[in-house]
Amino acid sequence: MPQRIVIVGAGEAGARAALALRENGYSGAIALVGEEVHLPYERPPLSKAALIDGDAPKPATILSEERLAENGIDHIAGAPALAIDRAGHRIVLEDRDPLPYDRLLIATGARARRLAVPGAGPDNIHYLRSFGEAQALRRRLQPGSRLVVIGGGFIGLELAAAARARGAEATVIEMAPRLLGRAVPAELAALVAARHAAEGVGIVTGAAIERIDALPDGRHRVMLAGRDPVDGDTIVAGVGALPETTLAAESGLALDNGIAVDAHLATSDPDIFAAGDCCSFPHALYGGRRLRLEAWRNAQDHGNAAAKSMLGLGEPYAAVPWFWSDHYDLTLQIAGLPDEGAETVTRPLAGDARLDFHLAGDGRLVGASAVGPNGAIAREVRLAEMLIGRCARPDPASLADPAVKLKSLMV
Image 1 (cartoon, rainbow, N blue to C red):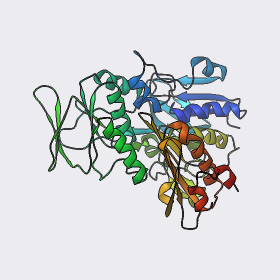
Image 2 (image 1 turned 180 degrees about the horizontal axis):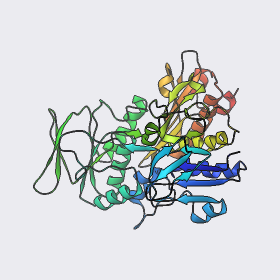
Image 3 (image 1 turned 135 degrees about the vertical axis):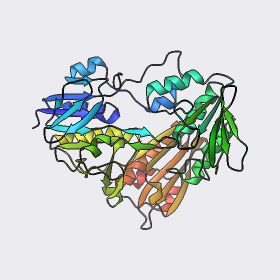
Image 4 (image 1 turned 90 degrees about the horizontal axis):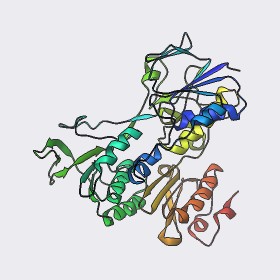
């Protein structure tokens, strides 16, 4: 049993892992190292409640000081990790003594991909990955102001919805032919796009950005190839994220679209594990396909799984991928991997909601995607997730018939 476990990264995966170590009987020392000064906090509210709610929102804390103390977790805040000394089994921290470890978990998450077009720089392009960045955006989203979002993915669209809620104008510019192109089936993405358009969000797809110009009045203009330019008081880039792998790369750990881990979340060093957005892992439900997921649920599940693996209690990781996104009163939920499907079967739900099942060529259910009010889709998606986890091959006609209870299709 390790005497000291260090977790680098105090986000969802790291905080969850620290708690899970105690829940699984670990009595040794735990150090949870975070670069930010805040207590560990949830990131999903950053593009939602942190922009809209209350007069002075606070981070949605995962672990309070009392809970950290109760569990004997040493939270070291405001301490960037500079290097991993693998030979010496210690972490080098900025302005602090090196921190020894017997087992190390890297849970460093992901960082925003920077917009690379002429005229884009730190003075005129905002990003959203931290509570501080959310606070800065919140101050700028005032009634009558104009937000331009570059990138029509989840973050960009949630930002547009938040801007409308605060009385600001919003335009979303997407370079691909449609919104939500990476993970959401086209039919559901079209429903979400239509809802944003109905709320007054300008949507420009298939756009090539030539450059960003500064205007005399302090605003900025996004110049598009062959299209009218778009002016804004605030420009936010939501063009994806990159796994934070600097520590792993500089210490010689194997990488593969993130820190490469095995089914137990172990890296190429048996004393070092990785969890959450920063790592890619093989998934047994999809033939060992290597995945890297940027999702709250995955970070939680990875934290729990990594804790067990560091204690020698782990099982191969096989949780069904799941994520959600809120837009006005619409919720979008995805379970499994829709892109593994060869056939789609649609089940209408109450309240104009819709649930699509994605079946592989052999009839196995590999994904489910739904859009509608949360109350209309949450339970059905949960049941679909269970079917996916059981590698079920349900009758397509039964899936399409809302009179057939999904629970009855469990095998």
